[in-house]
Image 1 (cartoon, rainbow, N blue to C red):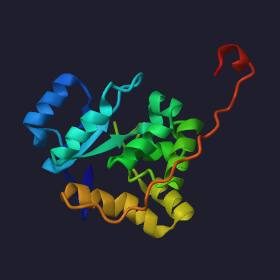
Image 2 (cartoon, one colour):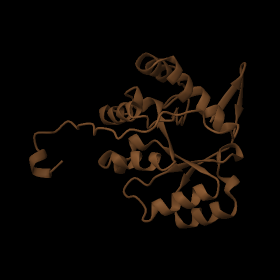
Image 3 (tube, one colour):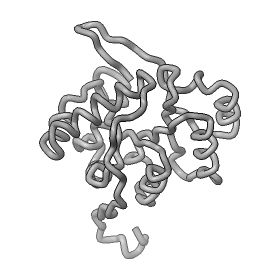
Image 4 (spheres, rainbow, N blue to C red):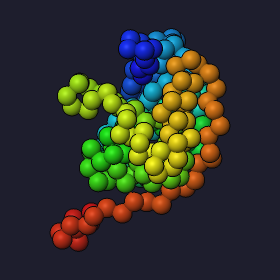
Length: 200
């Protein structure tokens, strides 16, 4: 995450924590090595092809250790695309979620955008982030996303998701009030003419 004072950016350490047995053992020993700005908030990235077994138990142990998992870019993950109720399940059990701003504004295609919009409608989004990789592709700019959230959900929601919630995380403070999660409707995929053959 990044904050700015005037024209001077301030960089804070953190990582997308990959769920693996070895990483979870290291997290248990030295959690502050992985959290955002040595806070109690942990970014968690899922594998693209499967949900690890006993993940409920893993999240429970992470939370018992005093950490809050933040699930990153679920709208771009094929597992969440197939099983959209997973996000509701884990948010209902104390996790938070972070959606990529360009997904919400259409930069990653129609289906990630529809998921992001449906999850926002269902109070399942707590942060929008650039997930920036360079100044050219996936740039570190949130203004377009902020405008769309403000136009769709109001200025107060845009302030909460793009300013107040991130500030709570980097300052290791409790999250401000979040509206309770609602079970989302599954966005419909566009069906192709050959879908009756593939079952997709």
